Image (cartoon, one colour):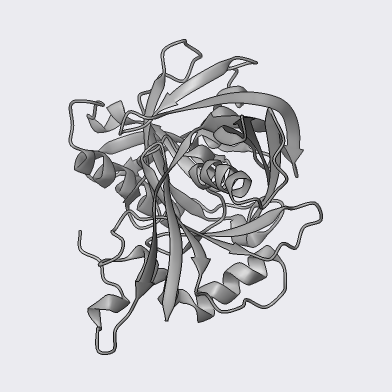
Length: 331
């Protein structure tokens, strides 16, 4: 077996795009494809994401046949725990990749790439100059504030205030200062432990629902912020801890979308463009493109922008008898 990939990163967050080696996936909706890959091909995810070829915080994209009319390509997102429903940093990378690889007709100064994700259709706009793709922005599915100004008693931390917002996936949003944390002063491990504790507690005690599909109603992770939600020209910092305590090096595209939904619902942002900074120092731009509805929820369509870069290309194999080569994780 040979698995071929192209490696990219967006704001420091890796994206391993599978270009060959997967068996064919039966036709169906994107959620049915996601379920099939999860139930029948999960060993390939572990080979690509886990050591010795990947690492605990690796991320990947598997391109599949489209099901939505008008979609140029469809993608399943893979990570250390399984399969997510939306990934903004991957959309930024895939937008550039689609233009570079000729998956869509290249147009200057802007090429549109319609990407079918498990959460729905995401529209990427790729800047193209002299035939070369560069910055990418995208408009995702309707995002909304699901739960506002909640509080929970968290062992070891006391009462913690939080919101829950949907940006293609559900996130808990909380000010890191409640945990005694400050960006630039504490270890990343401290942020991971705090965010994971909140995520696990909320998974136990705070049920979610989504108006479109029950498979979308799960808490993907927690985003700890610097608390600077009211609009400012100064970038606001956050760290996203998702899946099985996986740390996003980028500001998190779906997370920025969720934060914008919460900010808009609270009157903290209007038509301005805000900068969001990651734990690694990379930045995404984010703005509210327009308002929308998601079932009973008042929602927004967010526009998020960033840049992706290539890291390399590879072919991976497993030699007979190499049990560790099937994937393992150390943390």
